[in-house]
Image (cartoon, rainbow, N blue to C red; front, top):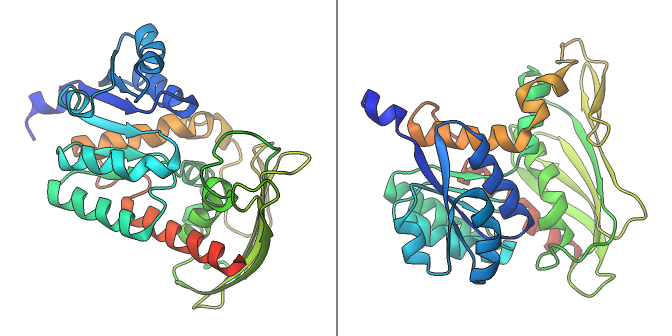
Length: 309
C-alpha cells in the first residue's frame, strides 16, 4: 500500500438510521482518517434526519449509497443485517455489522464467503471484546474451567425482531468463546417467551470439549438491569460488574485496574470501529471480532435457542 493510500480519508456509510445507526454515524464523525459520507434507510426522511446534521447525504437507494462510500456499517434491525451486508460485500465494500452477524448459519456463511471473494474485512460489533482486551483478561495464560454470565434488561420495545439470546446473551457467548480454546459439545437450558415475540428469558449451561462449562442467564423482562460475569480459573477467579465497570481478581495474573481510563475502556464502540478501519487500511491483520468468530457465536446462540424449544 502506498503512502498516499495510507493517508486517504475513507468515506463511510451507515445502513440503518435508528438508535444504533446514530451511534455508528457519530463515531465516523469523531474518528480520524474517516468521514461520514452517507446514511441509508428505507425511510428517506429518517435517513435525512440522521445524515443532515452530521454533514452526510441521505439515501434510500442501496446501489447509489454503495457507490458513494468506501466502507459500510450495518446497523439495521438484526433480521436485515445479512441482506444489507451481503449487498455491500458484493460491491467490494468492507463491512462492520452490528451483532448478531446474521440470524441463520447459511446467511453468516454467505457473508464470510462474500468477504473472502471480495478480499475485504468483515467485522462484527461484539464490542464487549474490547472491554476484555482493555482489562487484560484475554492475556491470562490459563484456560478457564467455568464461566457464569448474567445479562438482564428491563422491558423495551427495541430489538424484538430476535430473541433475548440473539439480542443480549450473544455478547456473553462471544466472550466465552474468546476465552475457551475448545468447542461447545452440549447445551441444556430453559426459557420462556413472556411477551410473544420470541424467548424473553433464558438460562442455559453449555459444556465444552475440554470440560469447560458456561452458564448464561439472560432476560429482557427483568425488574432491573444486571450485567455480571464470573470466570473461574484453576488459580483463582475474576468477577466483573459490567455496569459498575469494576472487577475483582484472585488469580496471580495481573489485570489492568484502571482499564476504564484507557481509550478502549472509555469508548469500546469507538475502539471497535477504529479496529475495523485499521484492518481496512492494512494497519492491523484483522478487526477486533471477525466474521468467522461472529458466525461461531451465532452457531452457539442458535444451539441455545434450540435447547429451549
